[in-house]
Image (cartoon, rainbow, N blue to C red):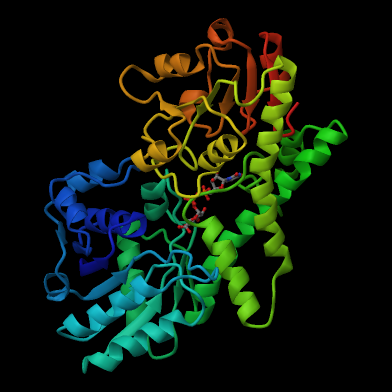
Length: 448
Ligand code: UGA
C-alpha cells in the first residue's frame, strides 16, 4: 500500500529516505528550514553527493515534494519521519535542539492522528520526550516509534533499499504504528526486510551500541598497528585471518589506517560515553576507542617526519601532496575527516606547502582561507592529471582516503615527477614491497 509520508530534514538520512520511499510509490513531502536546499531539490539537484541519489531524485519527481512549510508537509501525511541532525553538544552529549524543534512543529501543525517515526540518532528516552512534547500541544493522538538509520554514506541508497535489518522500537499500544512501518518497509525492500521489534528505549540504544561497536573494531585493529610494526607482522594479514572466523565475520571493520571519521562514529561514540557517565555507568572501553582514533593522525604525522628525515628536508620546506579529503570514499562529506585532521596537524607542525586532490570534494573556502598554505588541485583536467600535478616536485605523496581513483596509481610516472619519491599509504591500499621496488621509500599503517 502507498502512503503519504512527510520527512523532516533533508540531510543524508532524510533525503535518502525521501527518494527511496518515493521510488516505492509513496507520496513523499520533505520539509526543511533551509530554503536554499529546498530550492535546489525542487530543481532536481542534490545538495549532497552519494552514488545514485540524483538519479532517484529526478526519476521520482512526480512523487516527491520539497517545502519549507510544515502545513504543506503535514496536511495529508499518514506518517512523519523525523530525520534531523543530532550534532555533538559542547558537553559531549547529543544536541537535541533540532529534534525538539521538529516535535514542536509537528504538534503545532498536525491535522489528524499521526504516526511519528524517529530516524535521528538520539539518546535513550528521547522518543518518550518527543511524544510528550507533541501531545502537549495537540488534541490529536500521536504515536511515536523509533526506527534508527543504519545506512552508510557512499552506498546509502543500496543500504536503505536492502537493509541488514530494520529495527523498530515501540511500546505497548503502538501496534498500529508498527504494522504501518512494516508495510512501508515491505514496499521498499520487496518483502525482504528482517524486522527486529523492541521497546522504544532499546531501539534507541541499538543504534548507539552498533555504531560504537564498529568504531571499537576499527580502534582495536588500529591499536595493533604499532605492535605489528614492532614485531614485524602485517596487520592486513592479521585482519584477513581474523575475518574468516565466522564469529568475527568477513564484513568486520578491521581495515587499519588513519582511523574513523564522518558525521556518525565520532559523535556517537562520544554521546554513548556521555550517556554512560550521566547514568553513573561509565564506559572506559569507549573512551579509549576515541583516544586510539585520535592517535592515528599523530602516528601519520610521525611517519611524515620519519620520511622527511631520510630526505633531509624540514617540514617547513617540504612539499606534500595529499590524495583524498572526504572522510571515506564515494562521498563529498568532510565532516570529522581524518584526512582533513591530518592536513591540519601537518600545518600546525609547520608544513607550508600542501597540495590536495580529491575526486569530488572541493576544500571549503573557509579552510583554504584560514590556512592559506593549501593549494587545491581540483579544478579541470582528469583525476590522473590532477594527481600528477599535485605530485610534481613533491617530497611526499600521502594517500589519505582510499577512493578507487587512487587504487591504481602510476608509481613510475609519479617517481619521475616527484622531488623525492616518498609515499605514505595511510589506508594500506598498496603492498609496501611492490611500491618500494618501483623506487619509493614507503610508510604505511602496519602493512608489509
Ligand atoms: C556509519 C555506520 O556504518 C552506519 O551503519 C550508520 O548508519 C551511520 O554511521 C550513521 O550513523 O548514520 P558512515 O559513517 O557513513 O556509516 O561510514 P562507515 O562506512 O561506517 O565508515 C565510518 C568511518 O570508519 C570512515 O571514516 C571509514 O574510513 C572508517 N573505517 C571503516 C575504517 O577506518 N576501517 C574500517 O574497517 C571501516
